[in-house]
Amino acid sequence: MRSPAELDHVHWHDLTHAYGPAEDVPELIRALYADDDDTVGDAIHELYGNIHHQGTVYQASAPAVPFLAHAVLHAPGRRDELLMLLAVLADHDPQDAESPSWPGSSVAAICAELARVLPDLLPCLGDADRAVRRAALRVVAAVAGRLPAEVRATAERRVDELYATDPVAAVRADALVVLDRFGRETAALDSPLPEVRLAAALLAAERSGPPYEERLVDVLAEDGAEPDPGDDGFPWAGTRSQEDQLTDLLTRDVDAGLAAAARWIAAGDLGARGSWLGRRIAETWRDREPEVLALMLAALPHQRDTRASVHCLTTIGEWIERLPEPGADLRDALYDHARGEEVTAAPALLALVRSRDPRALDLVLRNPGPQTLSAAASCFPEAADRLIPVIRRTLAAGATGNGAIALIGALAQYGAAARQAQPELLDCLRTRRAAVVAARGIGRGGIATPEITSLLHEAVQSTDSSLSAAAAVAHHRLTGEAEPALRVFEGLLTAQGPVHWHLSSLRPLGSAAAPLLPLIEPLLTARYEWTRMAAAEAHHKVTGSPERAVPILAALIGPTPVGLCALKALAAIGRVPDELRPRLRYFASSPLRLLSAMPFSQVHPDEELRTLARTLLTTD
Image (tube, helix red, strand yellow):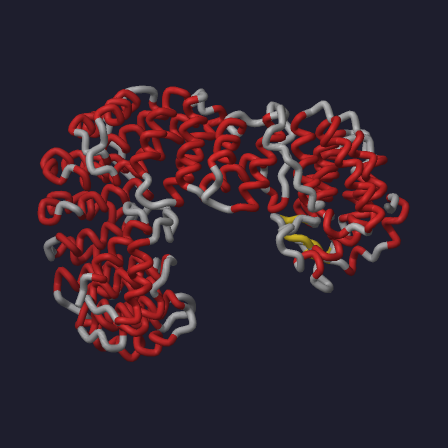
């Protein structure tokens, strides 16, 4: 260990942390000895921010370790937080034997320093404060595989004593985890202490992998239903709490996860742990929506606060369209919540709309909002005569931002019937409220009047490149004149910076964009994959020939956002290279979701991926 008197012996200005030179570290370490608790807390917070920034460590991190160890023993308070800072600094995957051994790595240097000071910190295992004992166990665990034989024997003996005698069950459970890091397997599934049984089951499940033995699932479900009553839920390796670890493990085995979530919800869904696990399963596994939504319905009465209720209702709304026929019990529960207090009514109404319950339409018309109107336009296409006037009124009332974008998107689903909303779209363009999507809407369904073409011509001159492009395309669609659009896109495609969204915008020009081909063709080999994808799609739209586009798109296809866009483009072309079929079969048949949800996406990307793959597999 090193005392604050030795801080000036380290050349901190030659070391770096997250924000540059580490010259502020000595001052922060000295502040740990202040009598004022707020000062100490601020110093710890700053140290977390610079020598351990979002899980990354730096040159200055290892030299700080012996000073932090001294502060643990001699500073006036917050010993548990200082011990946890030491533990997370040395954090590495215990399964990765090479990680703390990489020559010259910051993690290796930290682990070496912590191993040297560990003998001085071992008395913390006997501290009267349970939080200090738990944090000290995590320090031991961080370097369990890096200790000299004599220190290791002493540490293991002290940890064994805690496992056998500590009065706090959570501490005994932590000690069991540390003994496992020392290579000791302890038969603890039959322990009388639920915390110890749960820790043992977690360790066994990690070792075995899914599917888990029935006995392990019983322990995880029974003893994982209620979190430890203490308020010191410190993380282990990977900065994960035991609750996160348990959720991750159960998500890997979908049947075990569903069984555990059902039991947790039946026991009262404490901390919304069962409903949260159910949501994770829906996000991770395909075709388990019926079971997950049944769990959410069962969990709704148990929610103790508005936030937890909104979580359940939002989950239902995200997945209810995947049910062929949502049951009456579920729809009735949504209807009741949709007429309840305002905070929970919004997600409940959105879910009710997506269930296509006829009662939802009256509620939407009585209390219209952009998101529910957009969903209603999709789910009740036969109600255009009732919905379009409300959408128009909401737009005319001054909707802006994402709300206006959602309303204009709703109009797009009504084809020719949406023309009656042209005055509102023109006002959006004129006032620059969601002007880009308004320009596109005008181009899709408008009529080339002098007022419209004048407004579009003005928008073409905008310094907003997205608006300029959208207005130029709309002007072409209404007038057939290509020259203004060609001038705009020539400037956009020769400007500095990413151009893929401009390439995507010019697709409606079709063959009229042929003069731009000398600018598009070099982008087919661009380094940036989004640019290659958009250039290939644009090239096909302009030339009508798939020969250049198909190989580029096929090479990009994968379970990624750009891969999905390439797949959409390939589906529009309707040609499938034979070498792509094994990948498409994987996309179509995987039981796991291959893509995560994306903000503002009306259809889950993974569902798009699977549907497109299945469609293309039927293509000759």
